[in-house]
Image (cartoon, rainbow over all chains, first blue to last red; front, side, top):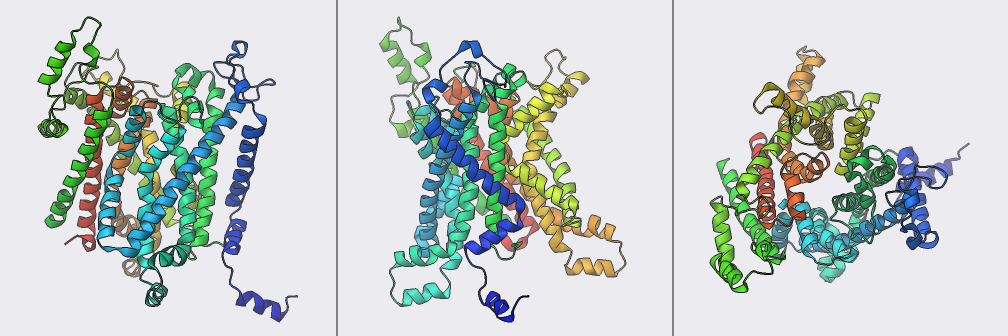
Length: 299
Length: 320
């Protein structure tokens, strides 16, 4: 029996914040399992990559094991140099995820700050920055990233992160700007202005928290997108330098038709891993999105 | 109407100008110049210097830039160091291949997306709708190169349904029926891959459009006149939802251009995307700069096209 007082309690406290997110995940089983899978895989990959796998031993060439089939010695087989695919997969996944996280952080901070400033102040600042953003959105950015990568003589992981961030921040900035624009016309902002609050305190302490749900959704989906772009570039040979293998580098073994056809275990695991990560992250992102938008909620 | 189009075209000019400046600066940063390939131990440095002087490479950068843009506008894109041919000839030939591929992709995209979107919208929340939403979700999340590789492995190498490389069978006589058939046959697999990757937007848009339309007045009027629901869907709702879909065309072109780099490289299809990658690898700068400019121009053209179609379809968004 549910007592009357209990019912009243429920009514008087509408679900907020994490409660909403939690309920959304309980309703959507697929998103729930995706979230658990992502967390477990991430912990496993980072733990193995940093504490268990010996990078030098992994990359040692052993011709006896050339293209060894998946089996007892190598769970997922070995590549042309007799190197374990599973180990490379873990290292590659670690590198790809790290890169994607850094790009998400850099583009996130830059995009959010620029977007908030444009949306809040408007006027000429907004005009100028929006022209720049429009320019970035209409240029063939994939080609320019490739050109940049080829003209930098000895580029490292960090160069790649910076180059990719340069072309990826405008998308976030544009979204944040449009939200900040409508937010900064609200009464609470006007009230705060009348009180004489500093503009930057209004922007970062008052407007930004109100956009946080949208930002979480956007950054989650962006993270998935960044994994896709980095692995794609690495597949083509213009991503991570050869010294830091990525998931894309593993897939790029398939550029050799013989490997593509006969030694499928060299490239299929990495492809499936990318596919799995992209789907799972997108599922989680969609669940966040539904939690952020009351109209779409399931729970 | 024309005001809107004119305004959009005028906005394009500064964007193209900045892009050309960026491409020019990048080209200057690329190591070597057109004569690097000619240098041998016996070459007289003075001779190279003379060649450089005559080609205007010692002029100040703004002079070089002005000359480059002048040539670009006149359609002279320079000479490829790799092919020893004018760049416009090479791009023309490869561009035609990319054009055919894009054309077939767009046709397939709409052939797949429109029925799926219609069905999902009409029977929303049914099992069919859920399956279609799941499909569009997967096609959205999967990276281009992963899907292309999986298709190539499955349909090309394992099932042998489609050729795995090239744009035409080398043994076919150009102009014969076999030759044309072979061309289309080589196009099918890359085009399907492209089409599947592009369907998400159209399906989701059409679906939500139809779900919204169900409760609109004109649908109720049609129903109360006694028109069967089937006809209301195929005539009234379909026509109303289709127009905004046309506006996706421009964005689709933009997406196709970006994807062509992956698809053409993986399927060994000799188009502009593959030309770009091989030019990068062989440091063929005149081709690279020309391609980046061309892609930038086409991307702008794509968004212009979308805006024009939009402003025809929906007069409310016209800029005054």
